[in-house]
Length: 105
Image 1 (tube, helix red, strand yellow):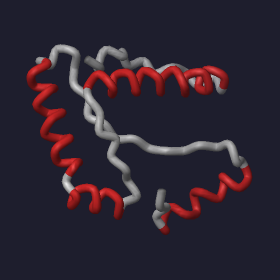
Image 2: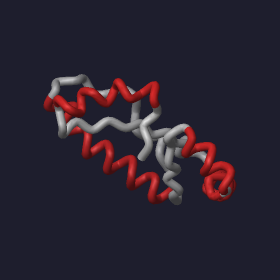
Image 3: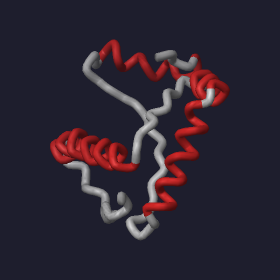
């Protein structure tokens, strides 16, 4: 993974806390009521765009790596991330988000 020069200073805490992990993810979610046909079409079109060499190159210039996955795999991934990070959030005493988790289909 390439680190952008403007962000290089943010990696300094990694030398102090070598187990610290920090990453950002961007994803597209739909409401539960969204038709599976629409979700399937969006997934297909977005994955087609992400697979293009020009798109990959543009994303790599921004130090981004696309995670192409099906809606089901995205659902599983988000669920595992909630489980993974939830225990740390609870341990730190950070209040849970009041937003309902019914956005995933």
